[in-house]
Image (tube, rainbow, N blue to C red):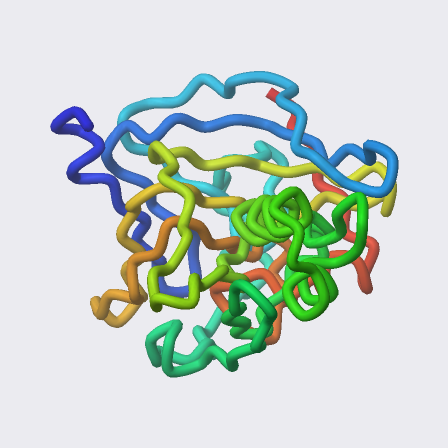
Length: 230
């Protein structure tokens, strides 16, 4: 990891945007159905400065960047998410050969749906290596970090992502999805306190999440669309 990525951070600005530092790569991606499963396909890399501000109010005309519209919209964006650690929040699902941790956050990305069932079904019922691998894949691709496969010896199976930020579109649902954050990127609240650093999380960009700053799939309910217009 280069020096800039060691400083990779997202700072939540009070009543304002996400301030991103550390020259974190920025992409537009699309949730695409592939049989019974889903995958992220890359549309393009988005040009950016070493530091940039991403809209989180949902009304910017300079998507994905902030253009100050939050002030006119009187956006508050008060943070409501728990500051407890993932392990404190997560419940455990016992399986035949592996277990599953689930903290119940959901951005409705649907990567937990695999060819032979959902991650939960596969963990609880499957003992064939290829089906367990499907469960691991579905868990690791969950953008919120909701799901984690745990081996019977207690070892967590976590993806090793390079730092990146993805602005996601979801044409199947006819909406714009959240901001998928990957890699060891610090997330600092408006109060200056850090959230737990995880390998993946999904941030709200529609401004309507009930679990701010994290995406809770409300973009689907409100039919949020905010296409990139650079």
